Amino acid sequence: MSANNTSGIILIKQGTLLPPGLVIETEAFLPGWNVVKNLERSGLTRKIENARWSFFFLAGSIKATVIGRDTPSALRRAAKRTLARREGQDLNSLEITKIVSRRFLVIPFLSITAHSRHIQEGLSLVSAKDFVLRIPVVAASERVAAKSFVALSPGS
Image 1 (cartoon, rainbow, N blue to C red):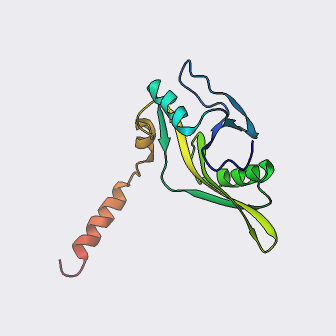
Image 2: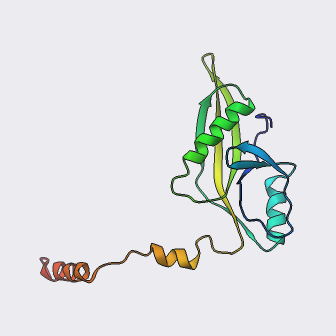
Image 3: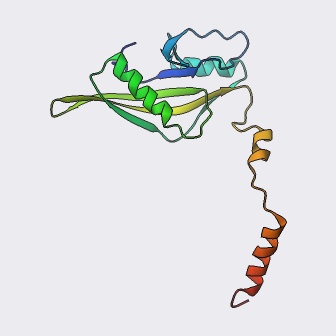
């Protein structure tokens, strides 16, 4: 894989469930991650949506910069750094949207911009079960304390 590719690189976590009958050609890229070969984002999205699955795009870019020329090894290091920055996201895909190779003085560096993606069967990114588990539970004593505070505040 060449780092000269300017964008559209899709990484998929190994073991990700895909729609039945969907065959995607991949090759190992990082431990636990494969890169999609011979298929751009639009083609992959079309195949997934034709199978009535979803390929979510999460707003908010993730950027990483590493020292080195525009080589596959520098791209791997930058992608690894990007994956590490996906704080708390348990998502199964990453799209590298921009690759820039520059020099500062005589030191070459490679910067990438990526977005988190997720492949799943449903239309909702968060399942109903997970949504209910994430709702904070307020204890009855905390509700009583909050009502007392409002009643005792000046000007009431």
